[in-house]
Length: 214
Length: 214
Image (cartoon, rainbow over all chains, first blue to last red; front, side, top):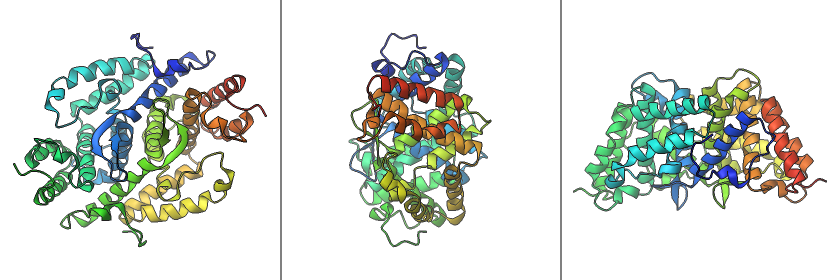
């Protein structure tokens, strides 16, 4: 169980005391992560007039990995890549979302997220916590084909939402089309085809005035 | 592309015409599925005062499959099981959610969902559409260990939310604790341990008056 004294969501309605203790730790964690559904991202949904939350985003990435796997530059294990995207934003439950164009928040991001990972994965039995932590570490390090493709999809997905919103976060004050392009470099580390498509979307968006030229 | 004349979400902001045509179909589908984030389920969130949507639910199941795989009664391919839960509710974009205690809506559920699957997966290039359709068919048929465990998790997850809400949908008018128990039988087809835990939660909920005794 967690070493922190902070209250857990499950403490509000404690699970029956006669549950198997290992399963109880698993379920306590699975209740705690419900909070991912409340962490808002900057991206607007295409299907409704509100911002996307991290849980929806993570599901969308999982489906995108399945549908777009054929565009990966290296062979990938699709099931493993999905695991990476399912866990990749969990630390934001405690660390919050860091919008990609917020350079000030970005400076403290790694430190905040490492602390959040210790706390969150510490709720689980040790072996289970180590398994999920290893997936998060793999995603962050981008040293495997699966992690590179997962990151590419994580950077590609908001492009679709911003395109549908005729700009979306591309219209963030102070952000130019070239800023958008430079934040999308990670797509090219996983998929040349998706990187080319990303540049087509940004180029066309800039032509239409959805992103500032300078 | 789809044989239906119905408008697609992507038609509201057409993708650049110079995109590769196969990728364009993939992206059109991936924009269309944004609607899963707007399909509300009956279950209340644990972390916020609102109902859960299908995209959040699907993400939660994916993580639960990873964390609870050790409780599966048969060996399962975890990555494949996650694929099943990622796609299992997609048809609700067109067919809507069918609450488990709504027996009237339940009568037409299969027919509505089959038609929705034809329409939705038809947006994709044929081979991609067949792949996703096969996963959905596998989930529905429950003939593989992965499909049985995926269904078990699909039935187990709302128990956690209803527990946290001190009843939640267990309080649906006309529903008794025994109705809740009978709807959870599918958990036992995938995991005896999770079925036992489900019964502990329902038994304790009934004792506390969160579900009606008769």
